[in-house]
Image (tube, rainbow, N blue to C red; front, side, top):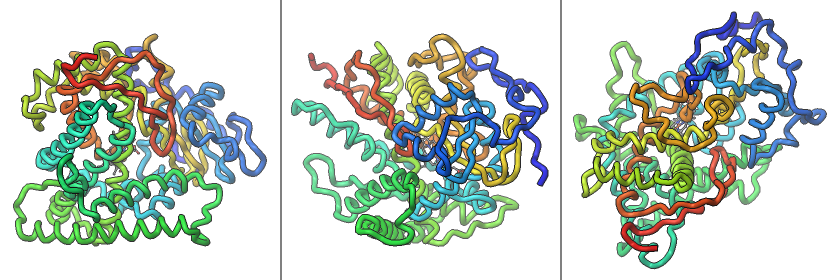
Length: 504
Ligand code: HEM
């Protein structure tokens, strides 16, 4: 089959200036097309290629290091599959924009997630993806987020109260443990309106056993994703050991917990068809019942909804929690950052708590988020499969070959002298121009993250709740190491807090 033309060819294309610095033309890597097998790459093993030398925990750094040695386009061999690694951000964006038709998600990730009962938008392709994407994007409306925000606030206030009580008792709050839990509670409430932590505030009765079980099962299943993606041989497909049977049992329990929730949401919608949506399930049912002009209605069985909702919870949990963890780690090393946030929150948010509208007027909080995501994007290694023979940056990639994009690489390699520094101020530009076009923490193209506004709202809500009552103490200790587990998380979280107004 004749390969499709490289979108970056024939030559230089005007690209956005990165920090005002000229970027290498995307076409610089093209013309004439070289076969992927001839491209340079790190030395690998016979038969297994690079599989035995991949450092799973430090994969991001390892792949970025190899880009430094072999250039922004290099080759890996993962068993029988050749892979083109793309570290240049313009080429990475080009690859991501070839979706959904010419570039597909990695089949390994898809299969592993589908087996874990996670099978919605992220995992689908073709017409099914198009239908689900339309539906999901229509569900993430500002109206839905506004309707949901009071519940997000309640969850945040509950966690803040715990942290305040810990400090009053002379203990440091354990945010490495608590941020993923906070994020999971927000994710489940956002996806289907269930507050897993209801009744667990200090001094109140414990949450129902069902909620605790659902929380434990979801946390457990999220932990299985990276383990299974990295398994050299997927043994669980042939025989089930006790741990693998535990995985199946958790999948079944999640399904059993979600089915009645979906039934209730359908009943609520039928009883009050005009009520404003308060969570994603609600909004999905509305979008499904009212297709836009010219659209075919999307069929979604309860089973499919279970898998879609599970995926939405998975997609938002570690991503939001670890983004917050990095932000706080970076802010504690940047003199004055937390104080500036405190000043902004005091001026913009009502004393009784940050409401939806006040959170839209927080330029400094947004700059903190953007700058921390530029340096520590929690998902910046994306894995794809080529759906056809095609040319990427002058390299002929055969159908079925892998494509990996290293979405952070350019942001750290090109630009001004201070590009390695955490400087939120660089985002406070008056002309509205993004100062760093190579930063893409939410992906690019038709499959960018549909949950990004929910994630930003969640991050700003927590910051606006914490800043008025907690001081983040500065530290000189170097930043924690990066650990890869689907998302890029800090190896430790050495934050120190103090009640505002208290002396050291
Ligand atoms: C800070 C938090 C988050 C980050 C950094 C993040 C990042 C990303 C990235 C990089 C992608 C891949 C984009 C691509 O392939 O081009 C993605 C996809 C996706 N995200 Fe997020 N995400 C976050 C939060 C969320 C939340 C809260 C939800 C839902 C509640 C969500 C739902 C999804 C879904 C469904 C996709 C797949 C989209 C598709 O394939 O069409 N994400 N996200």
